[in-house]
Amino acid sequence: MWKKLIFTVVLVAFVGVRFASSLTCYSCNDATSCKNPTVQTCSNATANATSDWLSTYHNDVPEVGGSQSFLCANLTYYTGPQIPPTTPLGPNNTLTSEFLGCAHPDIRICARNLTDPDARAHWKSHCGVCYTDNCNYDGPAGTFSGSAYTIIGSISALLLTKVLS
Ligand SMILES: *[C@@H]1O[C@H](CO)[C@@H](O)[C@H](O)[C@H]1NC(C)=O
Ligand SMILES: *[C@@H]1O[C@H](CO)[C@@H](O)[C@H](O)[C@H]1NC(C)=O
Ligand SMILES: *[C@@H]1O[C@H](CO)[C@@H](O)[C@H](O)[C@H]1NC(C)=O
Ligand SMILES: *[C@@H]1O[C@H](CO)[C@@H](O)[C@H](O)[C@H]1NC(C)=O
Ligand SMILES: *[C@@H]1O[C@H](CO)[C@@H](O)[C@H](O)[C@H]1NC(C)=O
Image 1 (cartoon, protein in one colour):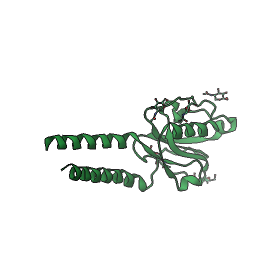
Image 2 (cartoon, rainbow, N blue to C red; image 1 turned 90 degrees about the vertical axis):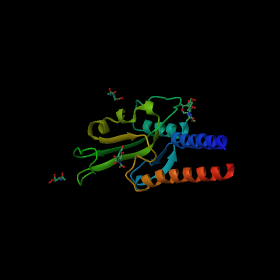
Image 3 (cartoon, protein in one colour; image 1 turned 45 degrees about the horizontal axis):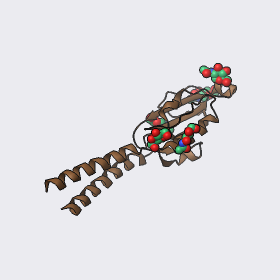
Image 4 (cartoon, rainbow, N blue to C red; image 1 turned 135 degrees about the vertical axis):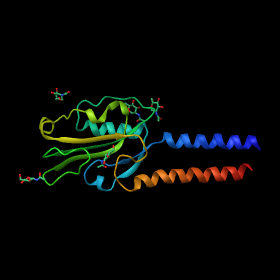
């Protein structure tokens, strides 16, 4: 009986760690797709895709062979008056580029140099990184996914207890 209980606890802990290590982030790469972003699971492949996208605008994206952990990023460029980071763009701002996705921490996505001199002179940015599932977008689904994982975790724990008893 005790053996089974300990086994269950260890297994549930392991399941919890697995969930924690596969970070998910909202993903989109222009103003249109960012109105309805999809969710991606972070991996070397999805983070590489972010580096590739960044390289189309920036000349100094470091090449990263692979990462053990990832972050979620959102990067918006706009023109017009400077807007405080958490305030939406105003009527005199134009969105020039928008991106959400998984990234390698080592590329330091918020500190990249724009390649185009005109963009470098006139574009302003809002850039944020964060480390929890779907944290890179203010959508209502963000908190939902978090609780969905918890519910799945509880159900597996219940099932396991039944199977093992
Ligand atoms: C990611 O990119 C790095 C550097 O270009 C490369 O070495 C690595 O194989 C790529 N990994 C995946 C999973 O595509
Ligand atoms: C990404 O690639 C690196 C180097 O190949 C590897 O050490 C690391 O475990 C990989 N990360 C994931 C999450 O698979
Ligand atoms: C936008 O620009 C117009 C014309 O320059 C100006 O009158 C107005 O106050 C500006 N609005 C904001 C919110 O900055
Ligand atoms: C950004 O890139 C431009 C053009 O490649 C270069 O002249 C400039 O020195 C770079 N700025 C920084 C801060 O790296
Ligand atoms: C970008 O992420 C930050 C958190 O890092 C969040 O406060 C901000 O609202 C996000 N921007 C968008 C457009 O979702």
